[in-house]
Image: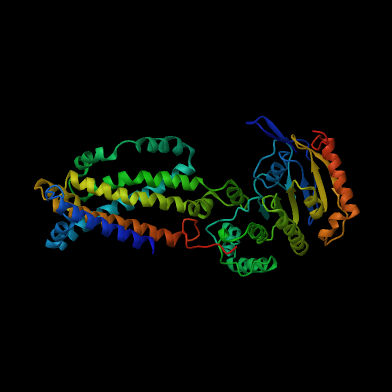
Length: 248
Length: 254
């Protein structure tokens, strides 16, 4: 597929071809402005492709498909709804069974260590807790596809590592198909079954790396030889694109 | 000491200073009566003042309610329709700079000397604050949240009701706080122009007989009414948006 913004005269994405297996965790890694967020928005049906097509669950995407969960960099929580009520937003929109959603929400909150905070407003939570609520909200309707757009980009380094561990744990229980956009090499390898490395504008796929590390991965895996091998390979790709220079 | 108690102390000090200054400088009561004279003037007929105040209050609430209903409706149409934004909203922003008080005599010609022209003037003065603040609020939704609503396949109406409207509430209340005071201004102006009732009429009639104490008594009743109306909106705000940062007693736990 291809994506061109006529107004800005910018081609954001060129010759993107990618297929993702159900239940797979795919990291979409690239420098700022490489169009990885645009690709995610195209998959979500929030943005139309200029040419080519995207299919989710066998159906071509022309509008947001059913069974989509999204997590944004800035959690996009509704300030006027309590934690529990934020999780009810998806069911409110599709006018579904509220009682079933309530119990599903409660078990998700318990799994993410948020029990006891159901009646708090987002403004009363820390950044990490807010993002966990956002993840719960994306999962509450049992989506077939979970799209995450740099969900931990606004968190401090320590919280971010903690969230990586927690996201892996959640994914191992829930087993959703995840597309995870990030610009952190470490995060991409640690979480992904595959890492899709993208080039700067126009965004193309530079390489797809199969991460063969066994799960559950512990934080210590990041200093293992294999992990560092993947990281070095990706760095070399970025150097090849002229993104990393020793002598500026 | 609480803020409201402090304000009361300042007010009492001001009145005492006023009383002392007027007596010491022997100011003519027709220019500036002492608070004690205003007080005794009020007590010559408290029910008479209350009757007129009641009329003014009803006119104010009428104008305010109309401004709120029409203002929110207009704001929704403006936000939901490009055409409305380009035409009606541009017009409203432009018209806002016209001194609305100048239109008051026209309403008397059109609607007579009953309660209708007064409500209409109150409405006209107050509605701009509601429309402008509500449009601002409805548009203040973060783009990510709108994307989220779309990704959840939320329709326009559902997005308006579940996302835009609650998000606009803090702005709407800011507009309402301004509008309630403006509706009171409108009611008084209406009563100035043509009326046999209301505090505006009391002030105008007392001015005709140089009864300065009565003018002041009516103004003080108006002042109390204005403060009470503002408190009423502020109280509604606390009930409606306990989550908002403007409601201070909410302290974050983390």
